[in-house]
Image 1 (tube, rainbow, N blue to C red):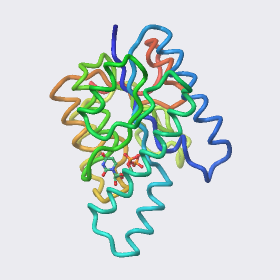
Image 2 (cartoon, rainbow, N blue to C red):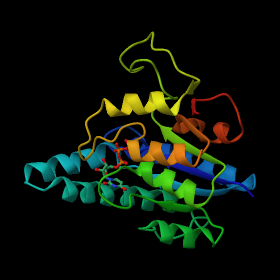
Image 3 (cartoon, rainbow, N blue to C red):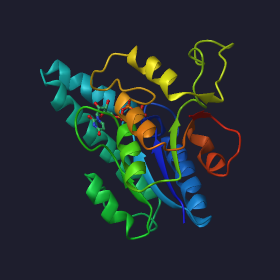
Length: 224
Ligand code: UTP
């Protein structure tokens, strides 16, 4: 029975936007459908805007980057709790805090939902590590846009989506970002290295397309 790891963008849980409850419920419904189709699942929740707001506040209070990462991790764990709640009963009830905890929880056959692990990377790296640890068939990075574009699709209407992107090209895009707490976008370099070394099939897509991605439909961008 194949394992799928889904990184759920913190955007889904963003309370400054309307109806976070229906976004969370929609993701939960897709995860239930995937489980009912016979796949084993681990979901990793991001921190999104709420994490960035907490990090911003902590930075004003003089926290170090590592401390700010810990603040971000706590927000990802809060989001994991919310997703566990909306998966009523079919998810492992506790948020694992390490890779070992995830591997152990996975033996229960329930959907496992986790957040961040440790400072210095993002929940994308966590998801990649878990996918590697469980020899997952598929890693889905479920974000707020349907894949990778040549420019920001929220700003440019003529932005073109790549259906496939090479790891090397993605690495070059990522290296042009700066790495501060709260700014690990798309896939951070750690996540990409893990995906590359273990050749984990990876799709970046919108969080409304998670189920379609598991069914092999033409959504998002594949990382090769
Ligand atoms: P995220 O991975 O959610 O970053 O972690 P993000 O950019 O907000 O991702 P999306 O938008 O939800 O998809 C939030 C912050 O928590 C810290 C980092 O500071 C990160 O920016 N973090 C998270 C860690 O330091 N380690 C982790 O394992 C996870």
